[in-house]
Amino acid sequence: MNINLIRLRTVLDGREPEVIKETTNFIEEINNILIDEDFIIKESAPDPIMTIVFVETGGSETKFLNIFDRLGKFVYLLSNGKNNSLPASLEIKTYCSQHGKDAFLITGTEEQCANEIKHFARVAHALIALKDNNLGVIGQPSDWLIASNIDAPTVYDYFKINIVNIGMDELMSEIEKKKMGNVPHLDKLKTKFKNKEVLDGACYIYGALKRLIEKYHLNGLTIRCFDLLGKYKNTSCLALAILNEEGITATCEGDVPSMLTMHMLTTLTGQPCFQANPSKFDLDNSTMLLAHCTIPLNMVSKYELLTHFESNLGIGVKGTMPLDDITICKLFLKDGKLLENSVVFSAKIIENPSLPGYCRTQIVIQLDQYDFYTLFKNNFGNHLIVTYANAEEDFSALLRAYEKLR
Image (cartoon, rainbow, N blue to C red; front, side):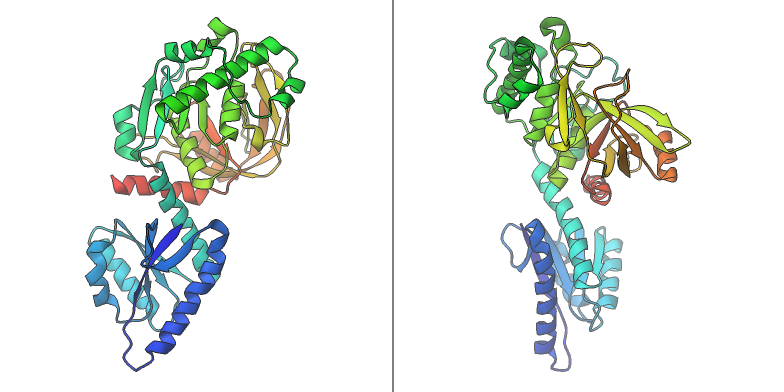
C-alpha cells in the first residue's frame, strides 16, 4: 500500500546534495521496516492511503503554506531531527491546529518513525477499506438488547458504512432450501459432532447466510439468532464461527454495536475477533470471565462441538484459546461522543475454564487494576469483542478519526 511523500527543504549554504542524500537514506531505512506490513513510502505515489510531509530542514514553513490546502483533515509531519527539521515541524504543527487540521509529528530513530507510520497507515487504510461497506442486520436486535442498537442513518453518518436490513423470513426461506454449499473442513466437523441431522441443519444455516452475503454484497452481518431455535431446533453458532474464520464479520443476537466493533477491528488488524458475554467479575483479582458459543475456529488451539448453552439445542463451539495478550473493545455512542464512551483495553487470557452455567467457550482475562475498575464503571452493553491483535492504540485512533471527520 502506497504512502505519498512530499519533501520540504530550504538550504542556504550549498549543502542541498548532502541533505538530499541524508534524507533519502532516512526514508530508505524506514521503508525497509515498513515492508513487513506491505507499506511503502514514495514521492508522487499513485492511489496513496495517506500523505506524509517530510520537513527536511528549517525554513520550510512558508513552503508548507503552498501545499496546505492540498492536504486532508489529518497532516502527518516527518522529521529526522536534523538541520532544524524539528523546530520547523513544530511550527507547522501549531499552524495546522490554528487552521482546523489535526497534525501528527513523527520523529525519532528510523525504527521509531517506521512504527509510528505503521500505526497511522493502518488507521488510514481502515478508513478507506471500511467506506461504503455493507453490513447486514438479519431480523432486529434481540429483545433483551435494549441498549444495543444504532440506526442505519446514524451508522452512515458516523462511519460511512451501510446497514442492510434483511428479514428473518428471507433467511428462513434460504435455510429451507437445505443447501449447505462448501462448508470449510466439513469432514473434521463430522468427527466432532456425531448427530448428522443437527450438523446438517447447522450447515444449512451457514449456506443460507453465505447466499445472503452474496446477494446483498455484505462485508459482514449480525443475526437475531434465537429465532432459529423454535422453528429449526438449531442455532447459527457454528455458521458464525466459520464465517469469522473466513474473514466475514458475523455476530449474533442482532447486536449492531458489536458487529461494527468487530468489523472495524478485523479490517484494522486483519485478525479474527470473538464476541463474548462478560459473565463474571472478580473485583479482588481484577479478572473477568468471558463466555460465548461462537468462537472463530482460527482463534483456538483446539475445539469441541457441543450444544448451544442456553437451549441445549443445535451446535455451540467450545474452544481452547491460547493464553496470550488480547485487546478488548466495544464502541459505544452517546451524546454524539464516540471515543470517550467506548471500551478499549489491553488484557491477557489467563485460563480456559469449563464451568457449569456459562456459554461453551470460556476464558478468564486479567486486566490492570485501574483498567479493570474503569471498565467496570463503563457502559458497553451485553457483549465485548476480543482480538489477539495489539489493537488498543490503533482502534482508539480509528474512533478518534471518525469523530474528527464528521
